[in-house]
Every structure is written in C-alpha cells, then in structure tokens.
View 1 (cartoon, rainbow, N blue to C red):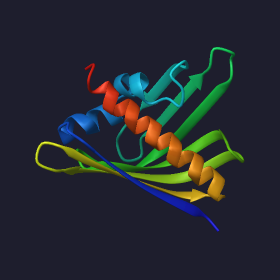
View 2 (view 1 turned 90 degrees about the horizontal axis):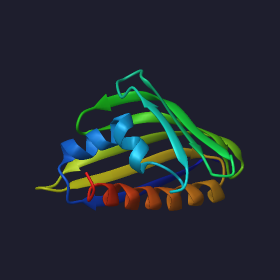
View 3 (view 1 turned 180 degrees about the horizontal axis):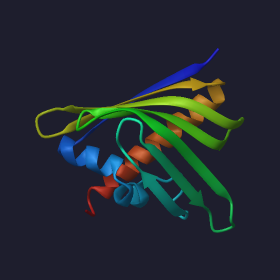
View 4 (view 1 turned 90 degrees about the vertical axis):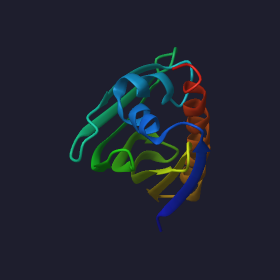
Amino acid sequence: MAHSLTLSRELFVPRDLVFQVWTEAEHLSAWYSPRADCTREVTADARTGGQYLFVWTTPDGTRFAQSGEYRRVDPPAGFQCSAHYEEGIEGALHTELSVALGDAAGSTRIDIQQHGFPAESSRDAARQLWSDLLDQLEAYFSVI
C-alpha cells in the first residue's frame, strides 16, 4: 500500500514570487536543500514535459539527488511533477508531487501533496523534510 502526505503553509509573499523562487534554478539552488552545508547543483526546465535535477553533496562527499519531469506547470498556480530520489529511507524512491499556490490577499497558501511512499517511515521522513524546506523557503524571502 502506498502512503501519501499533505502539508500546507502560508507565506506573506506574493504568489508570483513564490512560483518564481520555486521554479528557477538560480533561486532553488539557494534554498532547496536537505542540509545547509551541501554544495548544490540545480537544473530546472519548469514547463510541462521539462526535466529537473537537484544534486547535493555534503562536505564528506556523500551525494544525494532528486530528479523528475514536470507533468503540469500552471504559473503562478503551481505545478505537478514526478520526484525520483536516488536514495531514500528504504533506498530509491519514486513519488508524484503536487505544489498548489493559492492567492490569499497579499499572501500565498502553499499546499503540497506527495503520493507513492512505500512505507510510513519514508512518508514521515518526507513530511519532516518538507517542513524544513518550507522554513528555508520562508527564510530565503528575507534575503532576496
């Protein structure tokens, strides 16, 4: 049985800017990382059928990677994509991800849905990672 997660956050940032920061490699390389001490390589072609690749390398040389294809891109409302993780809690992981960005009078509501986790443990680890990533996203808006 596959497991899913749903997570929401509201940021007091315009939706257009949230979409831009979430879909352009220059911005993604600044905030989207599982660890602050990683070097980051990011490519992102945020259009329907486009590909993305995120590679993170820790100071000790450990490498993590996430790749996928944008299934649907609807600026600034969000996107859907596949998410393939080179290594996860139980090894390689393949999921489907949806990020919806709602306009809420000067703020943006972010709704994340991710499906296809093989175990509750991988889903729970992803939930914690998403919480950390959303914290990093929020912090990034204070420096751009």
